[in-house]
Image 1 (cartoon, helix red, strand yellow):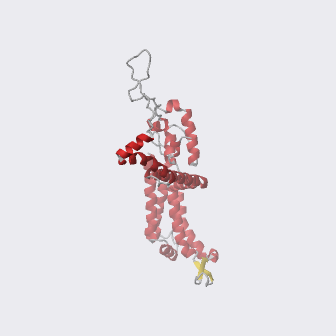
Image 2: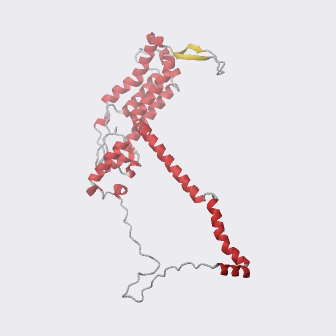
Length: 334
């Protein structure tokens, strides 16, 4: 597989697939998408290599050219008398012992200079010299490359990168934003519908020097009380059921015509209508005085407003966030 494709993230690979006319499912993993896209680009290189967006993939390097010797010398030939011939280096002349003695008598410093290099070389062969800065740098670079390769292999083996990519793809949607807002409100409401009570305590440990630790668990007996069901039904029908019904029947994404080359934005329930309906219900029921023809008790509305973070203002803030994300996604699809 192309190393250039492996360096791209999943969003860039999907963009390249759209540019090359290759349709892939959204649930495909990044490595599988890169392999499939590589085969598609290789098989359709004749008409895809001219696209500017794929120039980095189809880019080629020029072949190396053999260089001529730059010393200006030519090979000797019999027909060209002017050809310069490189002279072979002559053999080193051996200095006789008598000449060395005579030189030593005439100049002791010259004799010392003649003997010192060979003696120093013999000593240096047996003395371990420290590594040079260049060797230390090369060793560090090799260790860094090996460490990065081992970390990359471990991450690929665990599948952590693919899990993170899948999690990001799942959270980057309007549905995920609405689901997280509903979960946040439901967990906050559970403090009154199913409060946590003291179940038992862990005794102190003198060895570990830990004090007595109380353990709290949710009170499951609340499931058989009217308070749990009445509060849950009021909150669920006003913030989930009613907006879902309106968003299902008033779904404007079914007839929306996308621009040329854009993907069709179609939902089973319209996210913008869902959050608008939730905003209206919150303002009339939890912020205002509407009680659905007397079917909702004031005590239940007060209990919900006290336990959800921010009360009616917090619920309306979540609806505004859903409205903004729905509009933003619609703009990006154009």
